[in-house]
Structures are given as C-alpha cells and as structure tokens.
Amino acid sequence: MFGLFGGKDWNVVGIIFERPDLYRVNGNRGKGGEAATIRDAVKNHARTIFWAVFDQKGAFLEGATGQGAVNVPAPVVQKLTREMATLTTVREVLSILEKGKEAKVAKTLTWTGYPPKPEHRA
Image 1 (cartoon, helix red, strand yellow):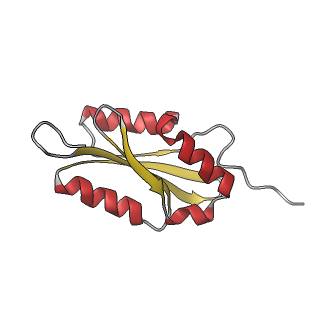
Image 2 (image 1 turned 180 degrees about the vertical axis):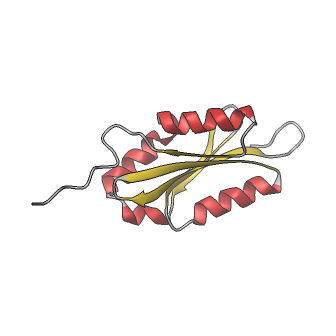
C-alpha cells in the first residue's frame, strides 16, 4: 500500500446508487493523508453501494460494501463485489486517474444486465 517513500497514492472508486436504473462510478485520486480522507468519505457516503481503493498500477488494495447497498437487490451487490475490479467503466475511470491529469472522474456505470431497468406496469 505504501510507495517507496512511505506515502499513499491511491485511486478511490465508489459505485453510487442514483436511482434503481442508474448507478454512477465516482473516482478520486489522493496522496498521503488526503487519500485516507477520500477513502473514508466514499466508504461512509449514504449512497455508496461498493467502494474500493486501487494503487496507481490498478491493483485492488481494499474495498467493501457501503451503506447504499440496502437500495440494491442482494444478487446485484454480490455480483458487484465479485466484478468491481474488472468492470469496464471502473477500468476507464482508473485509467483517467492514473494519468494524473484529473483528480476526480464520474461516469455512468455500464454493466451488462445491471442495473436492472424498472418494470413498466400497465
């Protein structure tokens, strides 16, 4: 987790519940104490479904479900937990953050079959 000189340089990604048919991937890059502060903010956000910390090479360091997981069906949370580090949208966000030109990135999650579209009732 720590670089050559003992400092953190993390990319923190959160999958955020917006509505039943829309999740957003928010990514933030932080160094040193700021990195831990960002992680804790994403971890404790009321709509975070799942959060994760990655190093600058894209390696998963830590992550868990968040408070927003209660808004999502359990099978979706389980699938996100298994697949988060490999989701195309997450990898795109990480790629932008790793280049260092942007400290914050947000994209709509594109994920096969999820989030489920709401059923239309006649």
